[in-house]
Image (cartoon, rainbow, N blue to C red; front, side, top):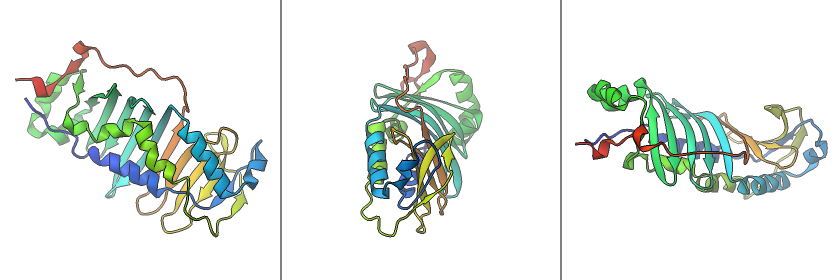
Length: 244
């Protein structure tokens, strides 16, 4: 039995990449907080520090929302440089929980997801799956790229080396993200992107936003916190591709 799913969720990979790429910060405001002197640094210096901090990470949690052709997509995921991840992805067609360990992928999904992707077979699929993890096939290939921080961060880190910073200014402000003082670097072009850089060391990017046509927000947290992402046991899995 072969079941083709995830056509719409695969769009999230591209949507998130576009979100991160489209949220490039190129101008700036700064925060109040203990490290007030950091607000006096140039945008170029702040972006360089942010790149160094983010590129050194081995794991990070990211969560947020974005628009894909006007449809809202959500993500809440812990990813690592090992390519392992765990978390949820929401689409207009429902929500799925993705798990990737050692290059192998599994997922679970809610009723709305199966109704949208399995059509008239949805009830039968739900009865077979129960609480088990579905073994991912080729349809999960692009989506698993979302789980590798090395791969995901490549395009993101490019934002932190702008080709030009002419016309950028830093203004004092009292901005915070989750209680952390931040430097807010804002692109005032039509893209309307903003990067929030932690004012205290290490200077992680804690949030990226885009209020333009493809409005979106992604928050980064749990930097290098211990993660234990394990594969499901065989009895907890179901493989549609190997069913007769």
